Length: 181
Image 1 (tube, rainbow, N blue to C red):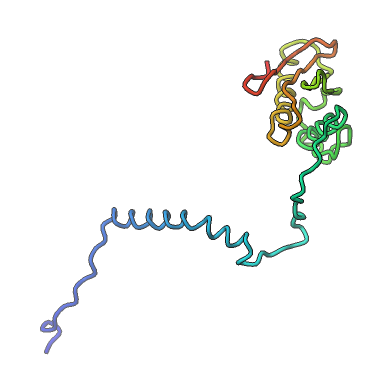
Image 2: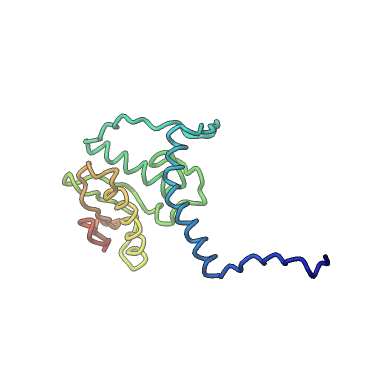
């Protein structure tokens, strides 16, 4: 028998590109379905987690004391502003940890206080004008991030006012649904 007399093996069937595409989509779909279970298995302790010295300590599940006094709220706000926009300073008025990342409007804030039990009034060194309005809107937005965050909802704060050096209101936000204007 010669090579020509032997039966030929059938070539593997050609896979249509659309069929390949559907196979990949189905595989991704299955992966997306399984990811939450895989993550739960890792977080749940089935797969041991590697820890290192740089890992953050576990967060306490004990609810923190909710500050109620005006001074406590002002202290929390100062720390919030310093940490997020004051170059990572540990508290209000402290030297920035990274001066290069201090927000440009941060230096205009002179002080702030809780007034009428619900509003944060921010005093600035700004004078009236279009540049002052722009900086005041940025300050108002930053303070609004504190006032309207879910983390501080229980403080009962409802508004933000930003005033110029002479005490005149530059911008005001009375509720979450409004803008700093």
